[in-house]
Image (cartoon, rainbow, N blue to C red; front, side, top):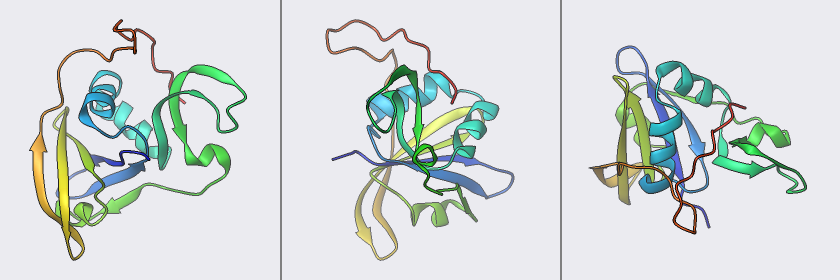
Length: 150
């Protein structure tokens, strides 16, 4: 089971554009990846332009037969049409909230955790900190691979 997240870019005014991400949505993984590798408006825009995401950091293809350098695994790679969603404002974005929502605004990532549902949106939305530092492998060594732009 994945820890789902929504990744958004604040546009001019109140508008936002976002995509769904299925795996590893918690701040200690996706949050760190977003902050480390998607740290400019252009990089975030390119990430979101690819549409909905299975994994931000994957070293395999959909058929799991090929290994590749770490990169974002998009649903479009297996033929699905899952374009980004445009939102009129933050409340509209919350209608599509997952366990976590990441918003890139003013050249920084803001993470929100969501609990419970009240009709169309979470009943509790809390701003949470993305931990500092690097990602770590299971053996405790820092991940040093570069993320390849898809």
